[in-house]
Image 1 (cartoon, helix red, strand yellow):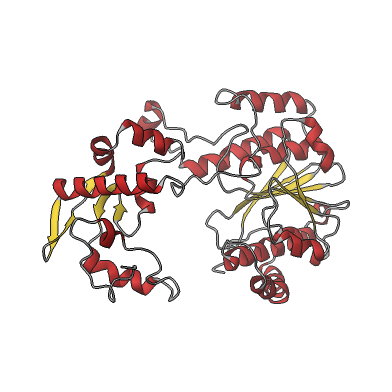
Image 2 (cartoon, one colour):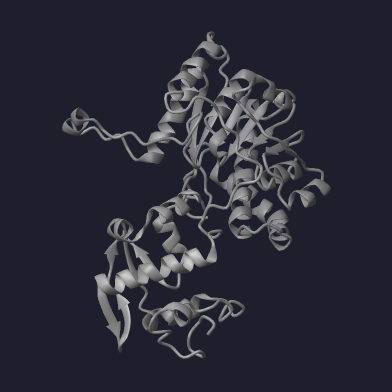
Length: 393
């Protein structure tokens, strides 16, 4: 899992626990995985997180949950399952959407609850009253709320942030002022700014903060551990919470829980005839704007995406794409055989030159299962024979 980044734990003890969990549980779970996600990534990662928490509780006994823990936004529920199997009892996972693999974990005694949590509503905290430790493992929009929920419950927490959110919307990157630029002050990128934002919340509430970096496949491996000091949290807790929330309400006024059924917004549900029409117009435009050819078969050089969008998209096109919450780049990336989108530029793929790469990357059961776009829609047809092309003629 790479060189050590862990600072708070004994490296040898952590590695031993990780190896044991992976050998004892990991391989079997990978074999029985029922989700569409990559089991190797999720199982290896959650084995690492489980090992870290187990060693954390050994090294800092006052952190260990006495009554139980709650994993907020638990997703597939694997982390809860692993912790339960390793003797961390009384825990449960909450998520807005049930996963297929929950049935397997529930048969093994893992408690997973399909529930919408609105942390802005005090009534939502009732489900958490039985626990004394909170976990936020890539908990997205719940991430900044977990320190507040922990503060109101009077418990410690573990936070492994991923996607940046503030209390009511996506977290926005700040740009340095002219004076900051002049003074050479570096305010960092989006993720660094988000980490500082979380640190500020945790410290403002009065928690003692410990930080570490986990040994997991994800690049977003920085974790925050909030510990209630012996003297307690800030005395004016609700006042501080209101101040923190008020600052976020400049952008949006209230928390919107994630819907249980999320719409597919990757342009895959656009009408087929509309997708074909738009792709053909883009091909015609590119062949005229930056014409190239390979043995007479027409393709193109690159055109900047903004210029292409300006020249090709109609108002109806823009409305159609906006209804998917997506733009031209997402649409073109979805037409993977036809277009190369790279560094903000778009070109027609030089199919005679890149077909072999597609063939090498495709599994045997995927070769020639999908219609060849060039064969059906390119004005010159497909430049390759049907037994050579990796798509179906």
